[in-house]
Image (tube, rainbow, N blue to C red; front, side):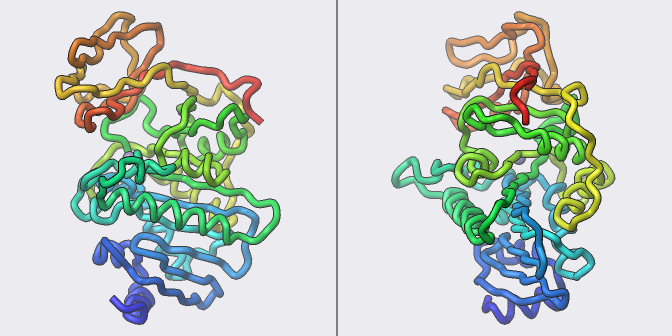
Length: 350
Ligand SMILES: [Zn+2]
């Protein structure tokens, strides 16, 4: 597709997700200006940069579809973006919209070959000679996000990246966020307040580096980066979008200078967890010993057998230990489940 054709289609029918999914592997660079003065630049398939004529001090990346079958966040972001393109929504901040894995979105699957959200911070290139579309994509997404932050005007600015997901299984707390490891720096009060405004007052605080997009944003871009789980995975058209209203309006307000309904941070308003241990799948014998409908953050009695692998049994070790992200289908060597426990951030927030 030629850039002129691309722009003609987009101006005639302002739906970038549709264009992305029609051209899941590549779109050429193209740019144009909306009548309200907002500059629109297409950087690649699923990557579109919006620069309003007047903008504040935040640089915001909104990412969805890093896992292709997690459709609700894709629909949510597409709606926000289409309103920008149709000039129904005037941005007050620089925004980069990303649809992470267009081929996987088309196929209705989490990934084509590799879990894209395990390939950031250079993990895309850690195994020499191994190639996949997701590895290529992770490398490019890193470049685009760095370019977006680097091209911001000089001065005191706030970098943010919200990577929106839905989880494979239901959750005791429907919406929750993963706060990447900050290497000992304080957690941000204002970010907790924003997460709560999105309806995500359950937060998992990580204590180790990761290969996720949000850790890349936090560590390599010095951004406030989060993985936000907005609910349960469903196919396109089967999402009850009313369950996403709170997050959608908070994000809309954030990028367009609307009123954010935040309340001052009070730890009692949150369910805070930290990782106690990470359980990796080491052989094909890895098995979970609880049902598929057991929700994230479920706790069991001490001593309950949760999973087994060749020669190992994983049991609940302490009171309050809860499961999260169990997935026996991951590749060998990858994380199959996290065990988390409640934690306080007293003295570690500012
Ligand atoms: Zn996901």
